[in-house]
Image 1 (tube, rainbow, N blue to C red):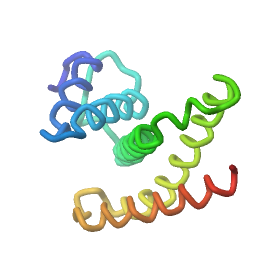
Image 2 (tube, rainbow, N blue to C red; image 1 turned 180 degrees about the vertical axis):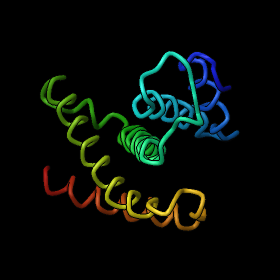
Image 3 (spheres, rainbow, N blue to C red; image 1 turned 30 degrees about the horizontal axis):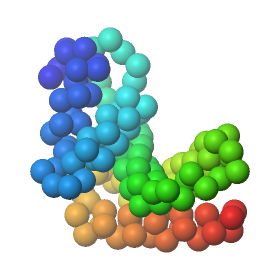
Image 4 (tube, one colour; image 1 turned 90 degrees about the horizontal axis):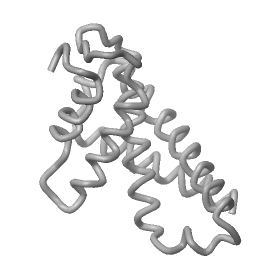
Length: 142
């Protein structure tokens, strides 16, 4: 994958991260968006040049995108009940910012010693804590 156009590398990585289950499309989209947002803007993909802070940014962005898509999908028609579409967009942006801050708060410190040292259970616990914070903060806004 090294040396391939960045957009092509992002697609390949996203497909590799996509599980074969009901959440496949959600995970694929989240992975593509996270990679596009967090990877350095270059013409070609050079994984050996990635710094640890860039890798952490990719993971924070990935979890942010995944949780955002999961929460907004779970909300379903609730987003359509806003007074107007601009308020819906504003609410989605507020929610995204809350999710990003919570994921960064919980995941960032856990990744400081490197993602290779994390277990699946630790990641699950981080997600649970982040979701708890997200709902707590969101309830204070509404």
